[in-house]
Length: 288
Image (cartoon, rainbow, N blue to C red; front, side, top):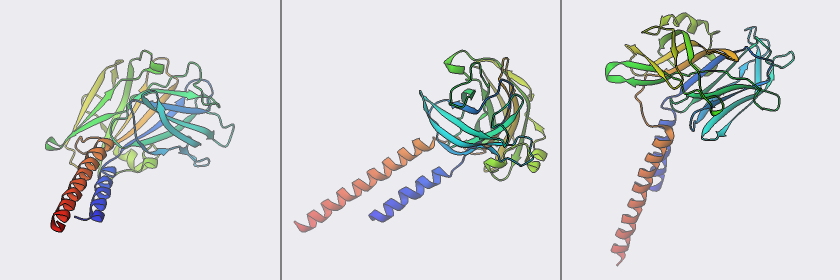
């Protein structure tokens, strides 16, 4: 094995894990509070955001016209903050009371729990009293049973403070053959809407207490397919009405990208170094 072959193997194997699967989240968010300019979402832990969706361009006629021209992601304490800014709706460029927006993101793994979510002003600061309660579906998949288990884990902790009981209503799902692009994962995708007619088993309306979790099992899901969930989220004193669209793959629960990349790279690098040490000794021995 020469140097070029080793390098190609490393790149190829990392590429396989980068493209193994994605976890896609889109949210319709209706402002129930005072006028705002931007939206921030804080995900628990360190997340790798691979893609984002910034809203509908002005003039689409969707009733949710308005797009953010700026998106950023970065560390916030030990968590990951996503921030959509510079909103444009072709009018006053404010997210007015009862106005709806649409944002979304994809991550490299399936841990995308929302820890905090709130409206911000033109300076990027949190609007006083603003709190958008949310739970994003997590998942595990058991290929031997063809079962996908969805879980709603209420880790929501506004500003690091106490959470609240969150209510999930109209939780529906669909099993699809192919990955739906992030910008099509919404209620205006007529084909998707026609598929989202299956209530999640065990009751599609339920509450999740602060720090609690509720699970639902979807059976008959073949490996390689995708499951799309749609549900509404609400809580007392909520500053928004949120409808979630979440897409997860029927794939085995595997280590995250960063873990795999570190493991594979370390093993291949060690193997490469060992090869060259042995090779140099062989060459030195033959010249002695």
